[in-house]
Image 1 (cartoon, rainbow, N blue to C red):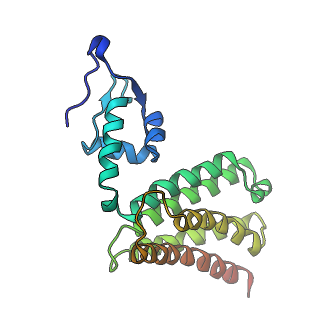
Image 2 (image 1 turned 180 degrees about the vertical axis):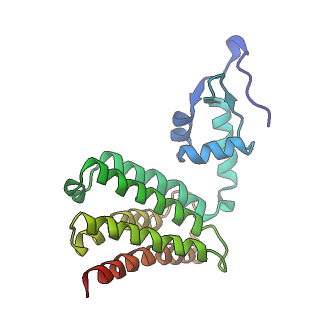
Length: 216
């Protein structure tokens, strides 16, 4: 699809930034960026490298996408909503356990949370026979979280509470049937199984690391 023309004079459509357009569509900015890069929706790139989207193009895209909602994988729907929900909770609602951490420690936990989210998103989209390398990375995230928590003198219960914050957010989104998405129990069951596999490995790695370090 051709990029929108910025020199249309008075007939120019109303332009939205990447953030505004993604909010209008109800998806994460990274998803809209990918759609634009793949040519699924027209985009204007300014000389400064910023993406701009015509409002009329967004409306047309929304109407077309509604007609093909049944073809949207449940994993993609969960991906978009989980990213929005997790980042919103991290920035707007500081969890209780953050009070025990310095600013540097808080940022470390946020980074681990972002890594875990990215890992889960990758794992739910690979084939049933794939993903062992991702599972190994999940264990590594759990070990890193445990070692950092041990260094701060935190008990195992607090380390698990931090891990549960991210787990609960992901599961809340997965359990919430998105509006307009057909109920497909087999897809939802697979999604839940894949998410649980990753998050279980993280928590088991946290416990195993604590046991190795604390039990002679």
